[in-house]
Image (cartoon, rainbow, N blue to C red; front, side):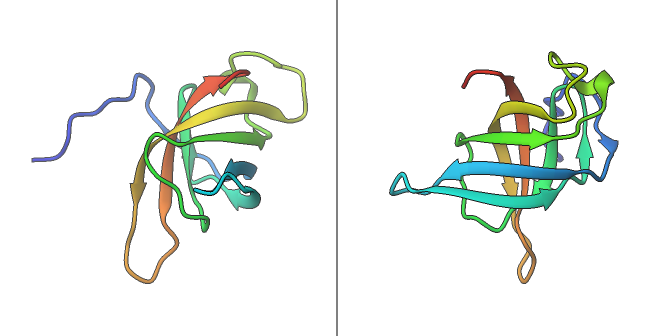
Length: 106
């Protein structure tokens, strides 16, 4: 039986560039460029090469469409903190990370 859907908003296929900033387990900062697979008003998913875990907070910067934003509606780039809700791994492929947008502050 598939897990219950937790999203309030349905995700739509959306391929946009995203800058992801995070910290490794030793608190060393890292940055990675990726491309989203889908997005909604509440979150997004994308492949991420850096190791990460559910519950980790990331900072994202991406040109998210206006109708998916909570603030900064006219800025070219939307900057938001995001909570990792799931990490899907398939052998031989880059892990897919699903995040929930938190807002301007972590």
